[in-house]
Length: 357
Image 1 (cartoon, rainbow, N blue to C red):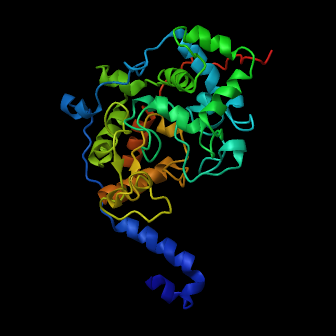
Image 2: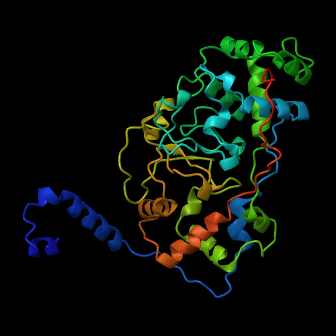
Image 3: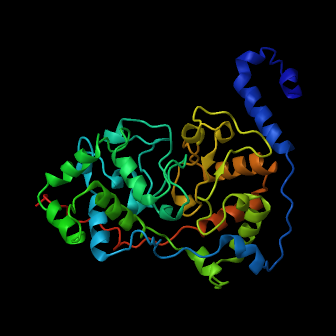
């Protein structure tokens, strides 16, 4: 600020953006650096890994929805089916591109929705590994992946169909679907039903997992990570990231309001409060998984940030009251890259759709 006065910037209001930028940078510099020592050959103890076990499974099983090859194949077809939307423009694949780690490729901060024009308040989360989360959506309004599929079909911002009957009729009008459902659910009196549509979609999505080098490391292969990546894990723990981003999915298991140390800016989205109407849930959101985080920008519930480095800076500042050195940041970003998993190209191949021949 003194420098401003020395240069005769007396009309502060006309240069408010300069003042804000300088004050912001100064404020961040005033925060102490994270204190951590790095050994030449860093060790990770078994105890420090306990919060991240077990490793990611190849398939996220459910006793209520046993997998069959027929259900998987039908679910894959439905995932790519645009005719399951109000104007036949939008499929699950439209907003969750499986070739690109299940994210929306449109350069929007929040979901563009049906016909790519109905903008929502929230960033589109990836569908990879989500079947293992304790709840669905940013506000956790749905508990199981089977129910999430149905909610999206009937959401006016997403698929836009009005009723369950309309969903079923959309498929019944397409030659081949009745036969597919009959073969997939042979014991049902009405194989083509809203419930079976959701079940098939969820069966396919339960196989959308991305095991990574991190899982190899958790299984005991200590050479799966480089020395610098291991140092990044140590920074991850010391910076407090593991407080929320833990478990098999590195998140997805709790609701949090950001700003444990330094208050988070108020937003227009009330978060989980919109579901519970409990004041304690105001601006709480489900902690996102860090699986594939380097591939799934933009970040945060409102998609406000496209830079992962910037998001890390914000998290460490608001949740820990610290800043990271460039070296610490570099190590941490390298560790986050180890969470980028392997996609089965055969599993996500685009299928032939009924009635398109």
